[in-house]
Length: 133
Length: 424
Image (cartoon, each protein chain N blue to C red):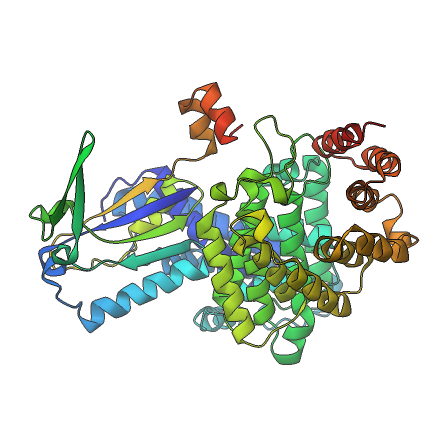
């Protein structure tokens, strides 16, 4: 199964403070482990929300909101995509991720919707249209 | 780490470490069976200790230490048994293994402290040793590197558990008998043995991608296992063009897994697939791996096949496909892989690039090849060329022949539908 691993922003990451050499190297080592285990598919770090924009919809209307955004702990600072056997394996890997911050920080693991889920969720006509068994 | 880790969480951690653990142990005890057993013993110890102590900071090293203790114990027991035997029979020690004589425990300690970087590669090369049949290599690799159970492997290959179990036992015995060292080969020997590793990974992939038998057109689980092995190998050998070529080939082909079969399970050919639903993450990964392989200057069979797959992946619409480039790549592939199947695909590419007559001309040159006798894709391709050339009666009979030759139910339905479309 495929999961997205979402690294939450911290005050440091929102300030755009570069990680310490130590933290950077620890993260490199962790990513290399993931690569060698055939787990890591993609990933990237994201700039602080001061560089971000949001497009907010309300019915047919929308407006564009410029960053930065206040709710630091709800923001995303980086992500990676892993291929794992199950959520247990994802959690086992995530526990090995070095904490990028000296204080508290959080990563969230979200499984992708897969074919099997679609079959349960969609009506038969929609499945037909999408070509999903 | 929290205390009270559940068994499930511990087993997940163990799964991550299992292959490397077996690899490190096999290198020391020179016996896959025993290595698997020792790894399993280490899990049992972890299951009893970790719920109390929490998962250690470095679980891999912890498990290795636990397994190492068991290995030393078992060798001491062995030695005692052997000494008793010797007292009775006075047989000389026949195994020139540094780890089995006196000082074995110390040798194990030293070997275990070695750099652990290469051991997984050693296990992969041993499980894929050319002296084993491809089927045996595939089963053993899925078992010891992929961590699948015998039952899972049997289901994946539509075989019985007993057959697979026996295949694995025989392979392990053959490895022990040959005295393989579980070291990753280097230099020229590595280059010579690599094809038998790549062959097995691609065999596993293809069994999932183009299921040769059974009800389902594709078995994505098997593809995933092969992709995982391919990704591991590319992580361990990042500078080998063919390793990257195989990875690129599998990633790009797998990007089409969900569009190869329609809602009713029927086969959908490449040109008619909904390209918006291809897995673009995998395509990206495949194209990246291919670019790295080409930068290394590799033009071996896997790099060329990946380049072929990439031609389709890059075309947003089927009509945009660069068929002349595909034909040219097949012209090169037939030089490095001169097989009738490549010749057949080359004929198909030429038919797409230069018209059905070009395809017919090339296919007629190879129609007598023994390897293509009873090979469904041959009459299927011929049928397609004839259909496009407007020779419907001949096309119809070719499609019917192809339908009787294929063992896959879905493919047969597809071919019969094409015969029907000829209105003969």
